[in-house]
Figure 1 (spheres, one colour):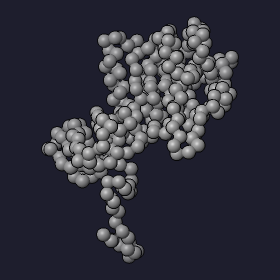
Figure 2 (cartoon, one colour; figure 1 turned 90 degrees about the horizontal axis):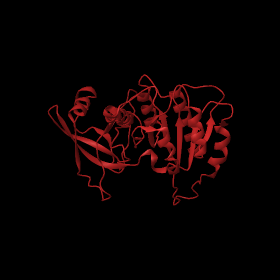
Figure 3 (cartoon, one colour; figure 1 turned 135 degrees about the vertical axis):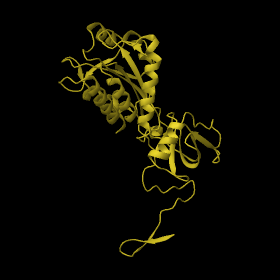
Figure 4 (cartoon, helix red, strand yellow; figure 1 turned 90 degrees about the vertical axis):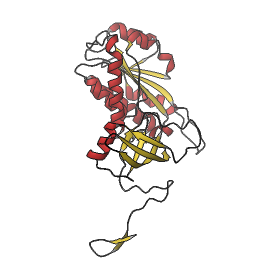
Length: 292
């Protein structure tokens, strides 16, 4: 199909050349679906999914998408597909066909970053969850320390974690990260120290003069991360744990326990950051240092 522009010059209308070669004129809208796994089998292009009533309302009345519109569907576990809206069932459900699997951002990551974040006040943890999803954090561990002010009861814990998971999924709909961070149960500092063996390196951030500058220690550690020499190279991501304290910082006992369990006590600079600022700065710094 050929059209003319304002100057009278012929131009070809954009087309989609089959399922394997989509020509995207603009980023597609992304929607979370609970499971898109094909169990390792060859994916059937005729497979369809149903959007729930909330998503259907958003697609139909907010975005005003029509039958035949293309979009992306992901499940937060690395599965992502290009899909096409097939039919609307009133305002309650919308059926979509999955056309092509897409590769998520994390497929070539050389590093897996887990963050243990002391739960801050005033629902700042909601923002931290959002930033963790945007930055591609592998795991987020809500941390309870001696100086943590916020108290979450066992009865409320699952409800709060469910809310954080919803925030992470909503964030992924607007980003190009395929995997949502795994949000673990609330963990005490003692319990966290017992998990250090799961990681290759553990970094605890503390703004003291005797803390080692992170730039110095990473300069040595990151140089040891293998880099691919050809397309067949398969790299096992290194696992890092970053520990960010509460507004009042870590206690002397917690610092001693971390050091006894071989954690590196580091600082980003000589100043003091708010805990949510420290989370973004530390995560961004280590991703850039190991993946850049």
